[in-house]
Image (cartoon, rainbow, N blue to C red; front, side, top):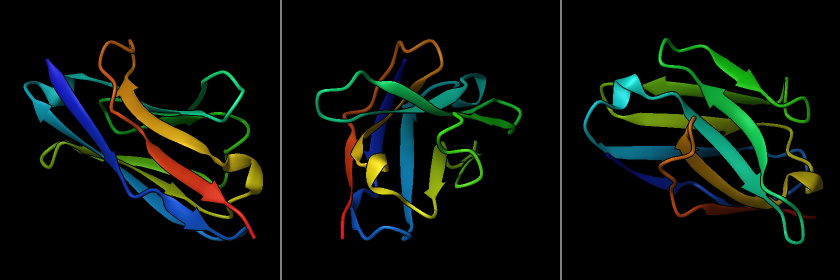
Length: 113
């Protein structure tokens, strides 16, 4: 079983950067691929990025080239570095296991001028 907690959200201007961190507690963190999803008001939750156990990552087309996900299995963390943020990136961001069994509580990201 895993417990996941997101941190690092906030308010930033368009073109700015934020770094989200997903911190896990529990056993066998290294055996889980951990992903990021986001949900904007009135919209469905959508996939953002996935960090595989071996360290590679996949990204949604909307964030490819701007967001980078990385993980540290010793620290039990998965980061999401978000660069060149756009207003359409405004959403609540969640980390979760790939099978979506375990979720964090989410952290709000607001991109606004």
